[in-house]
Image 1 (cartoon, helix red, strand yellow):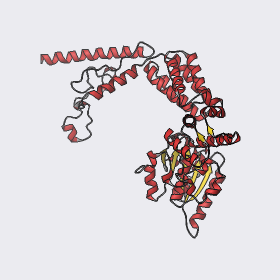
Image 2 (image 1 turned 45 degrees about the vertical axis):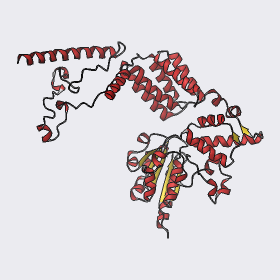
Image 3 (image 1 turned 120 degrees about the vertical axis):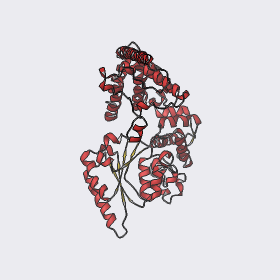
Image 4 (image 1 turned 180 degrees about the vertical axis):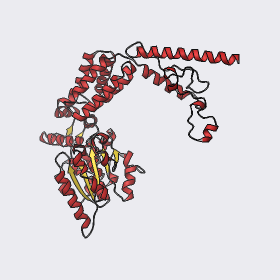
Amino acid sequence: MSALSANPSASPAAAPRMHQPLAERLRPRRLADVIGQQHVLGPGMPLRLAFESGRPHSCIFWGPPGVGKTTIARLMAEAFDAQFISISAVLGGVKDIRDAVQQAEAARAGLLPRATIVFVDEVHRFNKSQQDAFLPHVESGLFTFIGATTENPSFEVNSALLSRATVYVLQPLTPADLKQILALAQAQQALPAIEEEAIERLVAYADGDARRLLNTVETLAIAAAQEQRAQITDAWLLQVLGQQLRRYDKGGEQFYDTISALHKAVRGSDPDAALYWLVRMLDGGVDPRYIARRMVRMASEDIGLADPRALRLALDAAEVYERLGSPEGELALAECVLYLAVAPKSNAVYRAYNAARAWVQKDGTRPVPLHLRNAPTKLMKQLDYGKDYRYAHDEEDAFAAGERYLPEGMPEPHFYAPVERGLEIKIAQKLRDLRARNAAARAQDTSQTGEA
């Protein structure tokens, strides 16, 4: 659920909807009412163009919970006047798919033929054979398939089905989006007056998830009514939402202080401290995926080529968590953070990259030397593209001593300076040897040129 109707009371079904959950009551009835996802729904954006074309197409919405996947699918059905059939992959199976096929065939064969959109929520939970069951009907055009998933479809959706669907990536809602949604809830008198500090905390607690925000609003409204409370204060909000919110403010200073402490403990090679801060964050309710992303960054920034296995381990830990979830997947994060903490440290890659960026930003656009250019056509060869290039694999030790790979006139920048730790000890020695061979070969070329 991402979006909320700017004028929910305008619907003739507004009265019966008062008994529905708040998230359902505020679900948009028009594309123009959607809040958020403007990178795909804004004017000229791909999904908006699909709506305006009048021709539905199979697609997969990939994004975290509560960002509008189901809402957009329903709006597509309404926009194209199509029958909408919803299947939950958590509870459904092949029988539900067969039933959907029968309903789609009936709609197509009726006196007033209608298109059908089959929406599959949590499609990644269907196994291969269940996903394959959609293929012939998508191919024949019997129905338009729309899947929703919180997991990367590249890993969780069959390649055959994936090739027949456009993937749209939906983003977590911004704090501004969530505040707009909260204002709509207040306009519906779904909760009493609320302090600005409480709004900020409530938005941070929702963490980009509109459904979570509105479900929490309903809980607060019930509690406030029972206590005959005219205003929701920040202190009362903390009391109602419980220990988790008190201990960890996702949007506040403590969040950034704690992730900073974790990063610095890893950089400082203190495994106990790193594990402590990791558990503090998990216990406080931070999204483990965020921690996994930060550990990938730590592996690149603070370990680099001193131990290249660290980056692979961080990526593996992130994938394990995606597959197992909490709490099982958190052990992989603990294993990773301990490895990062005890690994040899080097920020040579980080410094080299920053130095190269700074150089390119201030330097001119130097042309690629002719001998390094590709020459796929006769004209390019006539212009000496690729002429005199030395193929390294044909040289001793697969190294063309003396060959130059930088633009003409550019001095050797030596961006990368390995440290004397871990694997970079060997890398540093190899670079010294190669540079010495380059220097000797170039000196000899200069000498021969002088003699000539």
